[in-house]
Length: 312
Image 1 (tube, rainbow, N blue to C red):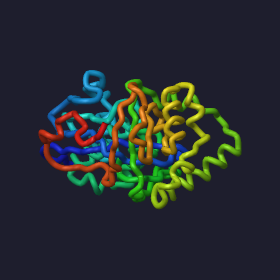
Image 2: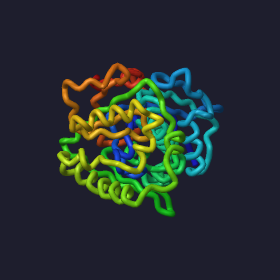
Image 3: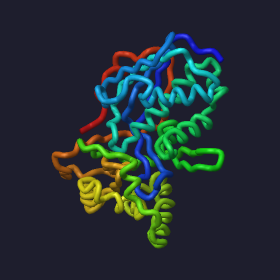
């Protein structure tokens, strides 16, 4: 195995998983990005972080991008002597917008790009399986890798996913709070079993949601009804639950983004709607390309930690 000379870079999108009833299966890529560059060095792991997480995230082997790169290099066939990483983060940390999945996908793709025949050793399907194995579930890594609206599932051989085009009437808006949430804590709030009627209702709405997102946005409000996870997590995120309820009362198809506490609205938010001072409101396009790899260092625009283009 040989490593490529010079740096490579990747742009990875934010994602929102579950989308209401599609628990651990459905995801959407959003036009908010982290940019990461990597280069093989003579030794050690050096990480610099700008933007979200700067001064908080580890800057060595324990950084999640570096951890994912190590895992990918093992699959590819060997470790480089060292790696230098430059991360410019715009995806909020621990808010339910896929920051960990973005880091994992970035690490897997950067490692593959730094190996001369990396694409032959680790194809796109294998990259998805590895990223999902590191993350623990595929609902965020799938849209991060592939873009658009994705349906992901896990077989004995690993994760698989399909990507579908969202209808023109889908208008994502995220409401991002200052407070953070932890996926582990949100999962701990879920019961071991749920009533059969709740499971049946949610399965039906998840099926309807696929149709609504791809062909009939007018059905998004009924299609986003969920009884598997959001109500159980409400006590731990009262502000999030209240905002979801307030938006839905106005006819907006609003859900908890991933494990929260961010709220995702999939249809237009009324101009006069006021979420209060605790929320930043960003209108984000759907990212249709997924993660994108290129040669070279980060440019001046890519080093800007401000999320250019988002409307608030």
